[in-house]
Figure 1: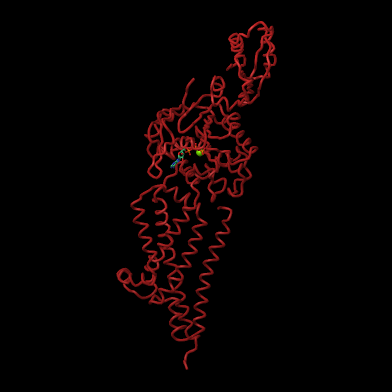
Figure 2 (figure 1 turned 135 degrees about the horizontal axis):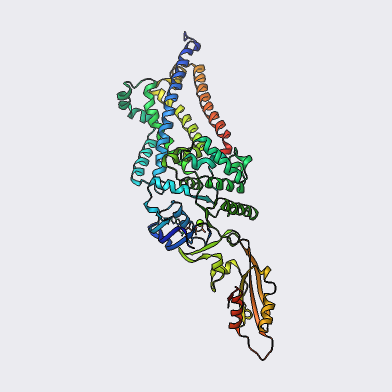
Length: 222
Length: 334
Ligand SMILES: Nc1ncnc2c1ncn2[C@@H]1O[C@H](COP(=O)(O)OP(=O)(O)OP(=O)(O)O)[C@@H](O)[C@H]1O
Ligand SMILES: [Mg+2]
């Protein structure tokens, strides 16, 4: 019989949870900021758009497509040399940040681009006819006018990032996913598996509910 | 007296669609007089919106020059363009308000992007919101307003920079006729108050009759007729005139050498016109068709009248009749 009860490992669970939250807290904002930047750029430089740069658009859109088509697990492996060079290790939550950011930014960029495309052209033309600068157009019109759609996209991408931490955990990044595999699966503590899954569900729910409530609160601003 | 605020010379605009050139405007020459209320009419696809979009810099002409107060628009740098766009504002068919901003922030937006301090721009925005009659709505969002109210916000937003020109691209097309009327009244009233020039695209002759002082007809990218309404109704042949004062006069019995088409202002002061004419020249008359329309505040009558000699053996001297009528300031067409 196993001499230890599952409760013995609860401190390890809390540590794993902290690692997961840490990964999301660092990678999430990075994905959002980078994705907003790339997505807005894609939107602006698309052919027929506001500042068309067809060649640059083609390069960027191809890069985004490649980024989206690499499975996350393979991306982590491919990035091992980069991660080692950047953070000095390929283990632990810090090592998962680079793959998480590079893995989820392309998808989020695409989401941002498509949300911006939904903005009715008339409002943009109204702003241009008032003499907005490009900078003002982005920060005072494009992003505020599409904010509900962007919130929705952020909810999607954060939930994706949570799943990503679990995958990264399985290859040595730690976190709840890693904990579930090690204690729940390999050491047969059903309770720990259950707690781990439950924790992931709670995190996803919290993100989703926050997003939904926020979007609903803005219903009349759409 | 000619005092053009805009002068367009040989302006063309071609678009490239799937590698075929589409000529939206073809060698346009046009002077737009300061203080006028100019209506632009023409069938769908004629190039009306394109013309307006050249004036608010959403498009650049493919050829030709556009001058605003004598200044060539093509010569403006980015800063000059922004300054120009504070003098030339636009309102839109679908209002194009910012949905994420309140009425107050929508109206204040053109000042916000010019760095006007918050207190100052809100004070000015409230002034205009009151002028358009929405003082109790400043905290509302566009989705909470009716179409007419949205256009009022659009007007307040356009006027906050105190522009010299207000461009309207079918600004009332999305509104019912009663709301259209109130929006037109508002435009006319604000124009009187602030003295800006209005350039308005419309498909409605009622709108032209009610609000405009001048009109431009565009067909297939070319200007086919232009003039003040007063000039237009005095022309012998005029498409604009026939739309502004439509007369049913196509039947053969309505068209003879003794039939004249009379147009005159203020028929209410001319009640004895035809009887005076009849006794002066010893002729009889019958009215074949006729109507009175208001151009702005001026009632204008258009009648088709057939003249007959009072004595069967005599002849009608049409030249003499015309001359007599012309002396009474009446436009006469055959
Ligand atoms: N961005 C564009 N690209 C290609 N063609 C265009 C573009 N904008 C306008 N056109 C074409 O130019 C012509 C004139 O269009 P415009 O919108 O000025 O017409 P309009 O007189 O305003 O018509 P409507 O009464 O339907 O609004 C049309 O043939 C239109 O298809
Ligand atoms: Mg149009």
